[in-house]
Length: 112
Image 1 (spheres, rainbow, N blue to C red):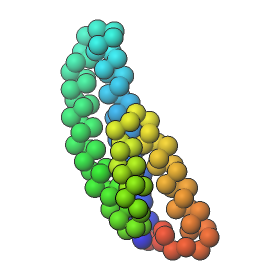
Image 2 (image 1 turned 180 degrees about the vertical axis):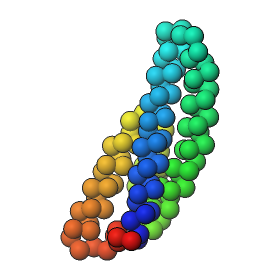
Image 3 (image 1 turned 135 degrees about the vertical axis):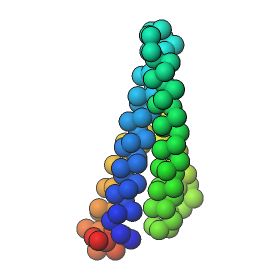
Image 4 (image 1 turned 90 degrees about the vertical axis):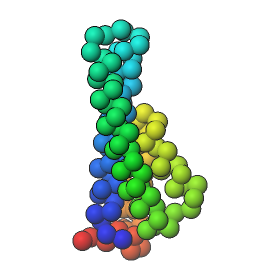
């Protein structure tokens, strides 16, 4: 597997995670703090997160299918973009697994 597959998954995991955290803050500002402009902010961020989450799903599925992950692990990674901050932890865990596999001599991630 090329390293670019892992890189694009990692980028989208961070982007999705950041947008989801921003959305949570926006919702707190909108509903709990009744801030002016929070409604417009949450609308923009929620649309961006929704579209970019679809791209995250595609990249995560591509990574999982190339690594032949079991369905349970694949679903776990795909759902990480729906829980605030989960994408960061899951991405880190997946990256460490692949780096450890590459260090052990398994050809999981090839430098391209």
